Length: 201
Image (cartoon, rainbow, N blue to C red):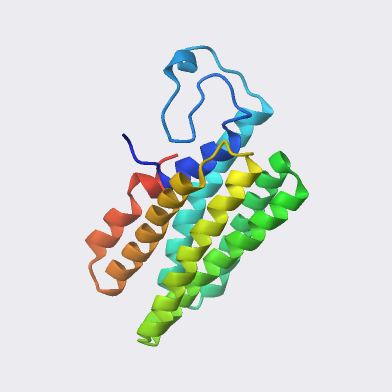
């Protein structure tokens, strides 16, 4: 059985019950029974495109911000601001489907998980292994909480355990790409950044 893909799982979990015709299931499998039918632009399909763009953008912006953070780059704050704008846009998209309360809950959890990556970068810069591990522990708890949130928001249509597994892939990729970059293994860092879980939607 194909494993869930983190960003694809998140995107399709949010909209799978609202999109019909060429749909993608919560496990990332295309519904071939309807895929060949003509499609038209609808609010649901527009949302699918929006989420795809924003989630892919999130992964790349997060990597850029982490690298600039460890380098002490002058434009780190600008990179962080872009990441925050992306979070707000994602939250707005979630809110458009599940209401303002769900959008606000999403924004809180999503912002916190970005902060844990920042904490990992700080721990790396300070050579503080305890701080880095604390960040990883927080990310582990986050994926459980976030998965439970989406399971509730979708009224059980999304299984928390499957989504949590996909989110762990997301964490592994960002941390792996960052660690490789810090170690000077730029080829590996690039390869990690190009993995489907991070860019394929």
